[in-house]
Image (cartoon, rainbow, N blue to C red; front, side, top):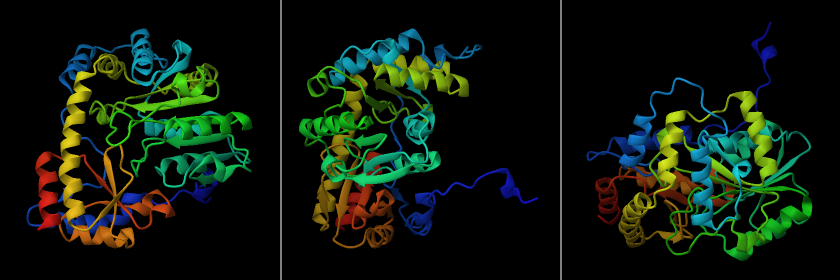
Length: 369
């Protein structure tokens, strides 16, 4: 019997970073070492506040709650109201998840979508939106604006502001348009706002903001992460907030599947969501790195597009992005080609700010030297 009788192979793209292995090897061979600016992995310390909470909760002999502890739910609710002007969601409107990428990848499946359902994603987008839809068997449609898909009747709409990879920020009017579009079609709007703490040239707004949604989160769910704001990527700590009917359905399914955030991680999330000072400190670090790196790129002849927020610079030399990746690899710098994020990004590269100050300065010196 063939092994294929036991499973149905999923049609998913190659893992993007596998396709730049050659450039990565060449960048690593640089005499002064690689400046890896290809991924958004935090390099700065996890705040002591969170580490201590994790340690204090390490005697975690019982199973954690899928719904999160009451203290964590309160911390999430408080954060969403304080930072994003969300209306009071209640405990039924919030849920911790095992890192936001897990949520993105599994959401269509967990909501019961499948063949015959359409998922709208941004034209230049984080690849996992499309992969998650493909795993569920959904049809994917890309769009820059709601007007681009006026004739569609999707089951789900993903928005992403600030954008990964471009750093573009959707303003209140655009966000409102997507809410109206989704509600008119009975679609769930899922707003990925994981980079919202880092606005530079524009202030991010949230789809949960009561001034934008009229104080009604029906049909809206926001996705958030502590990976970037709190250097917590290794903890796999994310959460959602929004329509309590949708969130409650996800809670019930996730309980059956054992999708539980570990108890020590929940404890760390609780204290970090209540503290804004460590976020300010991290924001200042990234602002400094952004200033150094953007100046060097411009001096080297690059044009930086969008990049109003987030942890990346969306840059171009007016040539195919893959050629730019090779050019940078010769300098010992590794970047992500824009085509990782859709054909609309073919002539750009995504350059991350998530490297140490020393590596950012090294990359900048190589660019202008």
